[in-house]
Length: 480
Ligand SMILES: Cc1cc2nc3c(=O)[nH]c(=O)nc-3n(C[C@H](O)[C@H](O)[C@H](O)COP(=O)(O)OP(=O)(O)OC[C@H]3O[C@@H](n4cnc5c(N)ncnc54)[C@H](O)[C@@H]3O)c2cc1C
Image 1 (cartoon, rainbow, N blue to C red):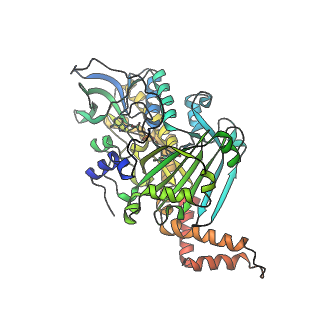
Image 2: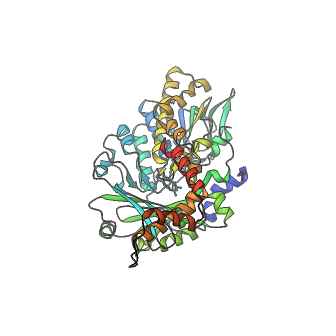
Image 3: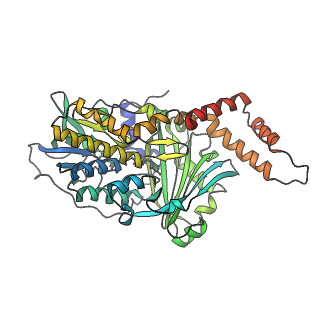
């Protein structure tokens, strides 16, 4: 079991473009730069004081900043990018519309939403065949919508603007290198710039996967390579009418497809394809330990994915507009950090609150939920002027009340089950093989489905006892 050393994990984050072979000079995601906000004149050394300093203007950070600023607290939102979302990577199918509706009523009328996801497909892939479960619901195409497709550079920027409109200060191009300590508790942040120490009663670390800040505060351990995945994503431009016709969509309806099986070859992982208004987002996600073990690079797998006979007709004619890569914390409950200490809480991917379990790839909604919970805890602490570890331990109660910890605990066995060798590589092949035999007409006596299924299991060397074990395991992970 490989443990990522501190240096390796730092290098992983900083050099992820190099790792995945991002071409030099590749165009960055489109969005105009936001104006920068300065807290004070450059050169001033005295530490500014805020009630809450939020590190990272992703979904978790903007939610936390919005909640705390609305309650009248002095909130500083620190973002290392040129603007929020500049470098953020997601699929992105966002399944938190109802949560967002509580925060910003009828948010979809003003936010940069690409399409409403009324169609969801789960596809089991073998090298030349695929079997898909295709779900459509007209109800998913009605407000508040079950899920929407978004593009993070636009969405994150809009969401951070809502926090600013509520009164938060947004400081772009501000990299937080460390937390400040006082009397044994976190008392501020150190920003990489002149006069960069900022005192804060509460620091909320929302700096994403492999959070350096959570580690520096001693809340998170180094990860094992099997707990992290690497995702690479492309955005392909395709005109709106072609997308509607090709994916059988009307109006602004959209489709999300998740793929499992041979699409990642022998690597544990999966692939996704989401329809935007006039682009497609597609990508490959591979477990880091498995990529290393099989010496595969995700962008090679991405090329194979696009060439698969079930995928090639969907992406035909699309021109690559963006290419990006990012890591994903995948082990769920088993990699949650200590969530709070005196003066500090951790939310979103920084707290490994990314729900990845085969059927589900939901990080944005849990980031927002945990950001809200952290913001609410900061407000309560502010009113009592108690920022001790005991006071901020209520963050855990807030996460339970919003069902975040319940979801992660309930599905705690799912990540290992989904990444298991048989589920990844054998069962999709068994399903595809059996489907081909069931649908093939040879002019010979028709076989019954039972013997076809048994033969498919035999050909792929799955013993009946293993199948029973896996069914029980699947039941424990997803069923009860
Ligand atoms: C390829 C891929 C596909 C995905 N698909 C989906 C999907 O379809 N649906 C879904 O729900 N989830 C998806 N996810 C997961 C989702 O992206 C994350 O769970 C989500 O972005 C977490 O939000 P966050 O705010 O916690 O962190 P992030 O979105 O990572 O935001 C962290 C922010 O902190 C900033 N930051 C980092 N370090 C510092 C620092 N030191 N100082 C200042 N700022 C800093 C970053 O610039 C960034 O803006 C996907 C992830 C990947 C990689």
